[in-house]
Image (cartoon, rainbow, N blue to C red):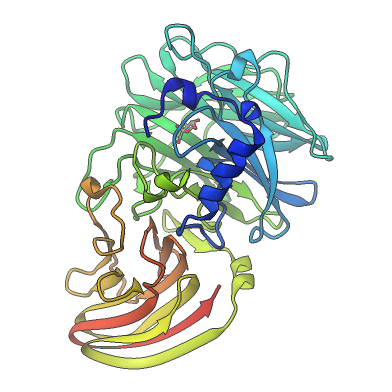
Length: 487
Ligand code: FRU
């Protein structure tokens, strides 16, 4: 189906109930609907937005185009949770219904102040020549969940020196002041992030650009996020236009981070180490973090990428969010662990301990499960796990002990996705110990290596009959222990 501009900018409010019911039916018949991930009821989901703990609950919004699997008029869809595991669909959070957000309520963040939730986002507009004019807008939500949008946008101009690619404010508090970091493009078409400050969250003063050592690093930085952990400052962003390099930066766009000293807000200087990719899998973008009630830093990402077709498009929906991960810092890198609360999802448990040698063994079954596999003695060239497997389909996750690499291969996973960006993702693991921790849902896999040292997040689109879980060892033997829970 060809999605014209008119179709992309149709409003949810204009759709009659029958049309919506038809679309829902189509989506519900999709064989790839997820079981325990946040996914849209219809249409397209992208970035997580406004992730926060407010008024006794977690709130997590996402970018939403309700009417089909394309990037059209974006709403904020609202979900909430007591435990970060089970999410309730609340409904539309922010409607793009003002002049300042006529072409989409784009990404942004949330912060609590005086018992009110402040949601700062980008109002996307297009003029008659289809030129963009971004506004930064602060909506508020009271503790009854009632959303109020301002009469006027809170930041109405792009400061000089930057193009109209200027969006995705992330707000935090330091001392008595609030700061916002916004993703931007300089007039010379390089990406960067800029800073604003405010004492009331409504009136903002432009401070200037955040100075980093990455002066020419892609053409646009989307979805910036800044937070501090003890003596460190951590800057997460999604740069576009980074070239592939070895095993890194294989996807169309990247998401990664810089760990440094605390951002010097006076000088706007951020002294930092190298750029690391957050996730080494095929489908991950535009993550956002928040602080949990107990002080943990939690990250959620979009399990998808812009400008890529997905097999669910034909079913009228696209994408989901990742599971929440807890972030900590170790030796200048972020460690990302699946949050403890996810244990609540565990149902029936099965275990195996075995030594296998030049063979593949078929052990468990499942399409929605958690699996932990620890290698006890590695004496083979390759050891791996095949999930969602049948005669002709499987997704392979293996450790190659010669190359010292983890390799995730989706060339046999089922319906192909973005083949032109390659069908394997790899990364080096040098410390000798290998532990795989997998969360497999109907159409995705999240692989945590060595308790969060690396993560591979990927959509996969196998047939539902492909439900075997196998272990293999090539070129020698390996002893392993595995436990699996149905979800
Ligand atoms: C990132 C992004 C943001 C923008 C939003 C629009 O995926 O392009 O920069 O605010 O999506 O949906």
